[in-house]
Length: 149
Image 1 (cartoon, rainbow, N blue to C red):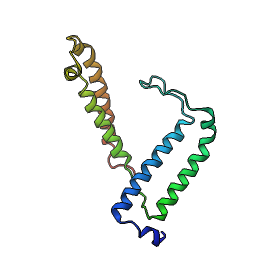
Image 2 (image 1 turned 60 degrees about the vertical axis):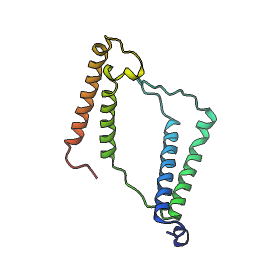
Image 3 (image 1 turned 180 degrees about the vertical axis):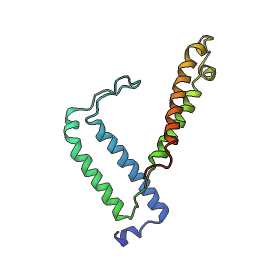
């Protein structure tokens, strides 16, 4: 690492720079994935395929150049590589999804307006089924022993 530039920032500033560059990098990779991505069947939220053709054709090299510049800037200021645990992220996402479904039961919808008396019978079993399946997926994850490295 070039000591002259890396010494211009302290550890807290370096950590903030690393987090910011990492977020920009992750978002740019998501943009890149959208260039050739096809909408998933059965998706609740369907993304409009409305990126301009010229953008789709020309964005790839620009994204690659941005990726290179981000890596260069990180190297110049001694930003260390950080490791993100896939295990912890998946575990958190599954747990959050279970909690969100619990908060969507008919009995919890009062803040959004009057709840039809028949809603619990119609909605809650489907939500319970989803929660049970998410719990099974979480149990599968957690039963795997130590996470892979």
